[in-house]
Image (tube, rainbow, N blue to C red; front, side):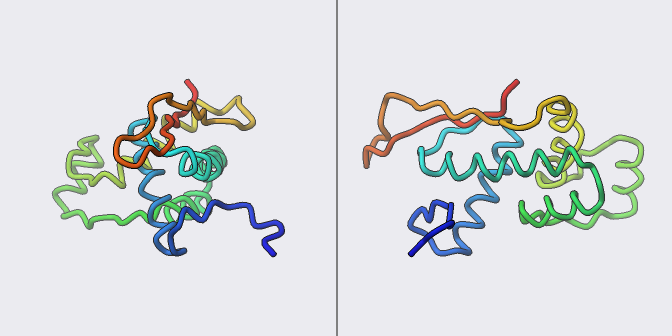
Length: 142
């Protein structure tokens, strides 16, 4: 019996599901809105709200927890790139570094007065072409 197992399996193995959620979370944080299937959006909503809650704590432990959840990989910077980043030039950062910065700077401040419900799921009427799956939009609330 699956009592108290509140997760969508999404017809994937555990490792595949974790990678899928991590990639979708990165895209959601980066673009603030993505189009996906309804089941994936409902599962992603749980994780997206938790990530915002961790970002609002703004501690080192919270940052490490988010990095683990998003499966972030940092590219090593050369000394020249480190000096440029210290002066504000982040062009040498990969997407993962930019996602963490956006989460812990922009999104944290946007939701500081809100206690939960940071995402919205909007169902689309047109089904997905090919298999007819239900599509929806998941986005962060403005």
